[in-house]
Length: 250
Image 1 (cartoon, rainbow, N blue to C red):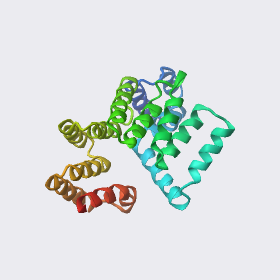
Image 2 (image 1 turned 135 degrees about the vertical axis):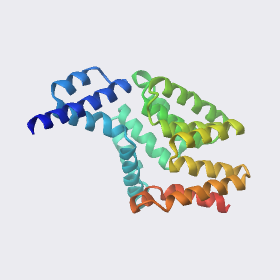
Image 3 (image 1 turned 90 degrees about the horizontal axis):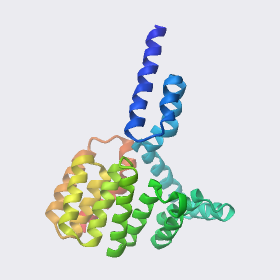
């Protein structure tokens, strides 16, 4: 039996080693994983694997939404205070996120641009945030800049939040008025990832374009899928169901 346990540890370490190589992680992870199979796998899971997973992002969004409902200004106040106390890049990122969540897209763009200066110019989280804020601004000029930020992100980390990056790219094309390209981008994102956000955003865009039949068709498919969700999935996707439903109902 001890040999079985040892073999399992090695298999887990091997899985994370493959993940590390595929996602361009530092080579020292291979040394850690194979020198200390059990401990190294636990550390890799906590430090690298879990933060990049969709489960972690979803849990964070749910927690943030709950806090925001109770006290909408709490995070922005905390982020502003933290940046005043220590104007680090990390605190600037937090302030930019809080401004975007607050609906202050222009302020968020400014914060993200500041944070991207110097050694953080290729940080994928900052590039993603800048693109999100630019799209929230809503102008064709901002949308074009958002596409540039997404291209830089893909060049830096092609594996980073691929499903969300695909949706952002489609939204940027839509904001530029590139209707056919936007439709193709939404369809591609939907076929590859089939996330609730992708379909909800697509429904909202179709309704905005006056394609009521297409929006209704997508809404019917989303409702069909929702019938099989558990209570947690319904809670997580409530925002997107509301967005899609409101769009269809006009």
